[in-house]
Image (tube, helix red, strand yellow):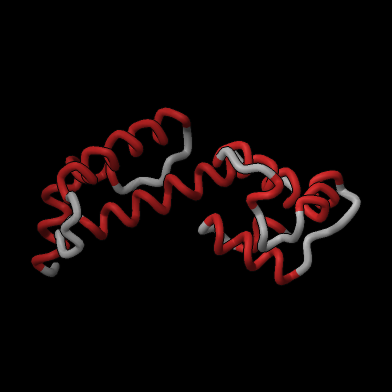
Length: 133
């Protein structure tokens, strides 16, 4: 048996709860709490030896969320309206989409966003263009 496997076997009872995919809400909650602690411990140190464990647990939490708490699909128009409310913007504040009348038509569903407008909105809000498609 290699030294690495021997050491892992020796400490497995302590490590095992952290390296098991969540199957229940209790598992999920335990991993979220562990991830919070690990992030406090590792901080901004990208070379910290525990960062690989942070990545693994983060991936498992994300996968559990996607399976058990899927995000509702929102239309690009609803997303735009939501972002405008969130940022306190009016229709006139989006010149990259067009004049206020064009934005109004987009928001009312009378007009669809074109590729240029989608790209502008994605850059304006710092999010993926896919959100508006």
